[in-house]
Image 1 (cartoon, chains in turn orange, blue, brown, green):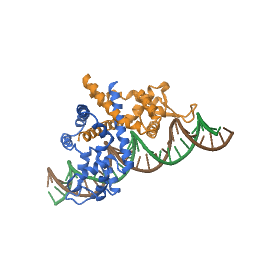
Image 2 (cartoon, helix red, strand yellow; image 1 turned 135 degrees about the vertical axis):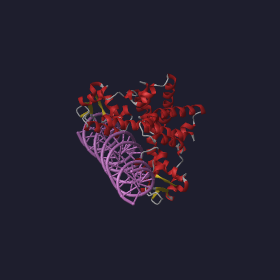
Image 3 (spheres, each protein chain N blue to C red; image 1 turned 45 degrees about the vertical axis):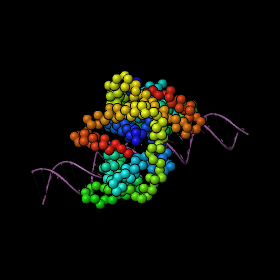
Image 4 (cartoon, chains in turn blue, brown, red, cyan; image 1 turned 60 degrees about the vertical axis):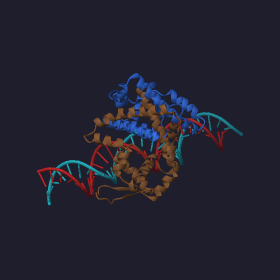
Length: 164
Length: 164
DNA sequence: GTACTTTTGTTCGCACAGAAACAATCTTTA
DNA sequence: TAAAGATTGTTTCTGTGCGAACAAAAGTAC
């Protein structure tokens, strides 16, 4: 029964993170995925990116990414600029209002989980990382198998984008 | 930057599990939370339980649990029997249709994650469990702090229910 | 150079998830 | 016993997340 306990533990971890996301949303009006998006924009060239780049960074479905951008756009933190050469591509830009917000929000490093993690000693932290990496790999093998040809490239690309 | 990488890794794990849940839902018409609920009912006395018990087992919000029961009820796998002594309490019962479904669904142990986990050797598996336990504890401390008096009991109660 | 295919995003429908507000019922207390 | 409070669920609102269907634009083939 070890494996089902692992499933439940993962569920618990997810739930805790969701709860923290809700808390942040209540305080600052933006959720964690929204903050991750704003952060990505803030560190992008010209404070701009495209839906596709953001999608790859967040590892999310295109429709989900669209929804997150919609909410940020409605609040005025982000603007869609459909101007570029390829007219299919929508350029997303951080607004000054969005930049102002980012400065007021405590960095993600101040999240409860991050804080707690930093209290761990070096070896334990490395172990945590290694275990998660193991789980990620265990799970991602199937995704590659279940996907068409391009996925292996996507996968490599994803890994190179694994930074906040 | 270790901590942000950990956050992203957790996101990836969650996403994989969600994808699997969607796949199961497409094949069998029920999602993982719904299957967990049916399983719980199947192992309960008289194939019956209450919303509150199920909520504690799933570690979910009352409104979320309500929604899951609604979907199961609409499909006829579960019935609400408002008969018990305490008229606030809603008894939930597994229908024969629900029992039939459960027999056709491969056990949760056949989930991809579970299968993969079983390929690991004893020590690695123990390590995975330990790490997740560590994360759970790290995260749950805050929930207790942030909650009113009863929470500590709730927490203990939750732990005794941590089986599928 | 028109027809087919691919790429890029959006929209819709669904499920999950939580908070807040509410209703109904039970319990306590004054 | 009548009023105040607690408990149990539901409903409503919002956000995340995915797949399917779609539209628009770009690229390819013939």
